[in-house]
Structure formats: C-alpha cells, structure tokens
Image (cartoon, rainbow, N blue to C red; front, side, top):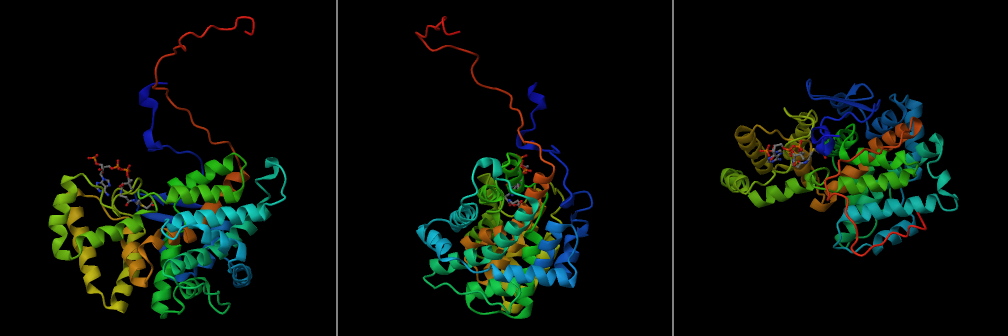
Length: 385
Ligand code: CMC
C-alpha cells in the first residue's frame, strides 16, 4: 500500500450502501427514504419521521397512532435510571449523563440475555428497543437540565404529542403552537444524515454483532465532539463571545488570525451550503419574532455575512439551531443532548440496516512506526519455536 492510497478522515470513501437517507451536495438536497427533509419538516410530526426512518414508509393514521401509544407508554424514567443519572456529577457534561443513562437502560434490558453470541438480537427486538429509547430520551434530557437548575423531575403528559411533551417535561409548561412547531422541525432536521461520524460509529459497533444499546452509547460519544454534534453548543459560546452584531468584524479578525475554526460553519460533504439550514433558519426567524429578539437575528446575519464573504464557508445546521434552542429556553449544555434525542432515530435505523446485511467493518492502516527491532538482551528460546 502506498501513502497515496490513504484517505485520511475517510474523505470521499464510500463505505457501504444505505437506503435510509441520501445526501446530494450537488443539488443541495437531503432525502429521508426518498422524501425531501424540508417537506417532512413542514408537514409531519417527529413521530411520523421516526416511523419513516425505521420502516421505510410514512405511517398510515393507524400506524402513527400505534407508534404514539407505544411511545407514550415508555416516556417515563424508571427509578433505577433516574438513580443512575443522579450518580453523574452535576458539573459533568450532560452528554456524559445521556451516555450513562442509555448504557444502564441497555444493561437492564439485556440482563440475563446470556452470552455475547446472542447480543445483536432480532429485527423485531431491535425495533422495539429503538422505539423505547426514542420514547425515554426526552425524559433523560429534560431531567438533566432540570436537576442542574435545582428543579425536580416533571412526569410526562399522555395528552401531548412528542414535541409538546418534551417541552412540558423540560419547562413545566407547553408553549405556543409556533414554538412547539419550531422545536418539532429541529428534531426532524437533526434525525438523519447518512454516514456522519456518530452514525458510522454506531454501524462499526453493530458490525461486530454487538447490541443496539452499545452501538447507541458509542454514537453518543462520537456526537459529543465539537466537530460534530457539539457544534450547536459551541455556536452559542461564539455568540456570547461576540456579544453584539457590531463586534463581529473585530472578533472575526482576531479569531481568524488565531486560526480558530468558527463553530457552525463548514461541512465535510456540503461545500456550498447545508441543505437543512434554510428550514432551520425559518424556524429561528419564527422564534425571533415570537420572543421579540431582533438582536439575535442581527448577530446571526452579521456573522454569517462576514464569514461567508471572507472565507466562502457556509453555515451548517448547528448555526441556526444553537440560537433557536437558546430562545426556546434550553441551557447551552443541553443542546447536544437534544441532538441525541433526535438522531437516535437515524442511528437505530442504520444499526438495523447494518444488522440486516452485515459485514464486519475493519479497514486497514499503513504502518508508519519504526522498522522491526528487538528487545536488548532477548535470546529466543529456540526449543520453543
Ligand atoms: N472555520 C474556519 N475555517 C474552516 C471552517 C470553520 N468552521 N471549516 C473549514 N474551515 C477551513 C479549514 O481550516 C481548512 O482550511 P485550510 O485548507 O486552509 O487548512 C478548510 O476550510 C477545509 O477544512 P477541513 O476542516 O479540512 O474540512 P473538513 O471537511 O474536514 O471539516 C468540519 C468539516 C465540519 C469538521 C469543519 O468545517 C469544522 O470544523 N467546522 C466547525 C465545526 C462545526 O460546525 N461542526 C458541525 C458540522 S455539521 C453538523 C454535524 O455533522 O454534526
């Protein structure tokens, strides 16, 4: 193998096929099972998109009702999972808390399941596990934010759909319909994005015939990084640093002189703009109007205009979703856990797809260490050879 064969970061490598989503940077489009994501965001509740990702088709009204009934039945935190969350220090990042909670849920669900040979489970078992994780993650995320604020757990409400109930469990009130709709759209936009780093991580783990919970736990670890899901939190840090639209130019002079990466901009696949941004920006505009925060829009527009004109690098989804989650009232550290609650649908769809046509994912490496050498004084035991 020559060094020119190496694709560092797997740039441009097509690792496998997927029927879950299609990213086309040429046409700037993202399709979930064939449907443009912006159409889904404009028309569907998140539960229907989860169903689509798992099953390949949008649900009939009966299928949606059945999924909703199962989701509602599994929303509440068990005492054991709550106790596990409480073990995580309050000043640890909530992504560590979410990762721990999913790991404990997996250990409980798989208790008594025997040898590792049985770990991967059947397609039916894994669909049921996927729905249960999807159902309980809002409670994990909401409780995480509340306990950091010194507030108590809020029980789910059976009369609310996924998005409204998520906001209820976090804030103890259901906001206006436009706010719930903006949040629902963000969940749909974050749900799936082909072989991104966390999804690929989940497929690598599934490819060893490990279990779905292990694959999701690994994916949460991959999502935490600021080059991936952590960017939505990082965008808010940037906004706080800049403070006001009139500071953008001088802040950017300094940041670029120090070769800083500007969080919320750039993408491995999209080089001319992220297909999800216009839809999320429209949701942000709705929130800006609802909460009467033109200052947020002014800072957003100023940084985007200045950075795009200087570097030709466009915003990604995290750029509008960071300030949108801030306006919704989420703490900055909760933003990436929100991404988990959404992306768990895409991860689990990919895990099941990997399991259905598995090949162990095991690439090669080019060795760059010292030539073969020997431990000083070592005398081979010729009799043992
Ligand atoms: N700020 C400043 N320069 C940038 C940025 C940025 N946000 N993004 C790319 N560049 C520059 C980079 O410095 C490099 O310049 P040069 O060729 O002079 O060294 C060039 O553009 C190519 O960058 P790259 O890092 O090699 O490109 P990549 O495809 O490996 O990286 C990325 C993609 C997302 C890691 C990168 O754009 C980045 O770090 N962005 C900031 C973090 C971020 O917003 N991440 C969220 C990604 S989208 C949501 C998700 O998938 O989770």
